[in-house]
Image (cartoon, rainbow, N blue to C red):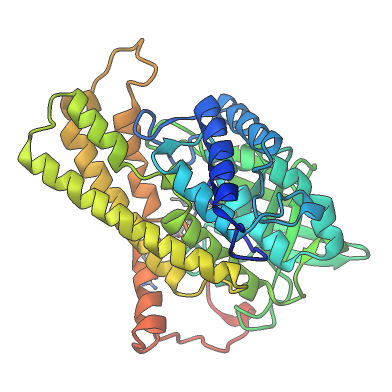
Length: 415
Ligand SMILES: Cc1cc2nc3c(=O)[nH]c(=O)nc-3n(C[C@H](O)[C@H](O)[C@H](O)COP(=O)(O)OP(=O)(O)OC[C@H]3O[C@@H](n4cnc5c(N)ncnc54)[C@H](O)[C@@H]3O)c2cc1C
């Protein structure tokens, strides 16, 4: 999976034979279904129907091999393995490009949220199909008037008997156009301060009342969308977590996202790029260029650091902790690293990054890798927002001033 951040029961597979057999099982799936990292750099969000079908087929191969939802409980469709297996899996995928980008939010964020905060009924109903890839999930936080300040969001949920009625608009919703379900944060009490009147819900994206409009990106793709809710309905037992606790859950989900972007297991968007780039530099005759070699060595070192940060966080998650500000460190580090990858890639590619033969199906890979880099420093909270969090929560600097602290949301002026 793109990012297997999961809870687990133990940290030991038991013995070395078990490790070797497990590694072999992972290698067989990779060899049969994946390409080497660098052959096809992942692009954030650009998911066409073919890419979605490929991701589902890849996930099916993981299910067949007993490798889907590695450490999630078997009763909810997981493989029920240990964090040791997860670490081995992540080591094995190093250097491969896994064709599972369309599942990254579904598995990297929505699945851990269901596992951590879902009721037993919600877990039984939703987790197995999520893990197998039969259903794909998106995350709906951002709005036109609430991005960095997501707690200021305006989408309303109003109770109507056994249902909630949703009215409002989300934006930048990655994958909404192919998703079956979404996790939504909506305002359930506007008389409360902005962080307090929010609740999280599971939403059926295929219902009437949910309209998804794709947005065109600089890369030419349409990976994310506007989503309009007009009397969309949510059964009351699809509320995730407690009423009014949406902000706390949103923070947990954002931390899963930040870890997923910045310290994932080394696949999909998180794949280490240096092995593929070293290969490409050699193939294009730049293997002896001293400046390029320095840049590649620097990348390799930083990817090792990213790996250690990820390992540390995954271990903490396995011990039952929701990632804290270290998620912001991981996200910021991943974002800065992706820019270095872009710069080294362009130096290797030269003119190939700007022009390619029309019949070369992979010809756009350098340009796409470059164009999708900007989004990484925005998605999941911008670099500036991560720096604010690190400043306040790690370094203990004073909090940002908020003139409306404690005021009811409905009394805060907005345009
Ligand atoms: C590729 C991609 C995928 C995404 N996918 C999703 C998704 O699936 N679901 C979803 O809900 N959202 C998604 N988003 C939205 C993303 O979370 C927001 O774009 C992000 O939180 C920033 O919000 P904004 O765009 O409204 O920018 P704004 O909040 O308007 O920020 C504008 C600028 O002001 C700066 N800024 C804002 N506040 C502060 C501050 N307090 N201190 C310092 N600087 C500040 C920001 O850093 C930024 O440079 C995605 C975004 C991208 C790029």
